[in-house]
Image 1 (cartoon, helix red, strand yellow):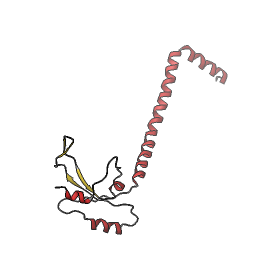
Image 2 (cartoon, one colour):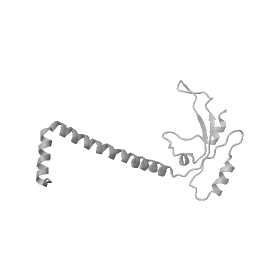
Image 3 (tube, helix red, strand yellow):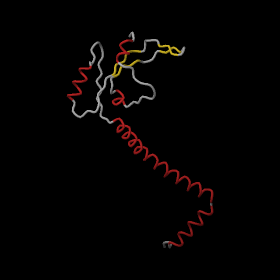
Image 4 (cartoon, helix red, strand yellow):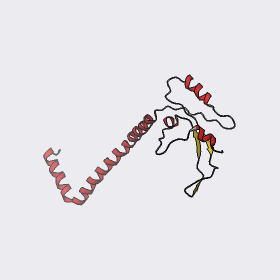
Length: 145
């Protein structure tokens, strides 16, 4: 004693029309649940694509050499690495000179973080210069550090 397809559709329509508010809220809930599951699954794909794009912009991989204490890399060391590492696009160096120097500009006191960087720093760091220019080596040597 099974129902025919026509009887099943008729019975379903009668049941749904008997309680319109409950039927419409159930329908909305089902659609919201499906949308939430779909969005959750897409978060992983979207974040993977964003990370891959950011790494492609920086042209990874990168190598960072950090040294502490009195010993530091010199320009000769950078040239040595430039000639020994085949296929690199750029190599740069940066050294933190501290933030203990007081700077006054237009009556505003500040203690900026001061970094000395080499010429290709923008290529290797992924940063960009918004305004202004870098100081030359001669100007840096003239400042009393």
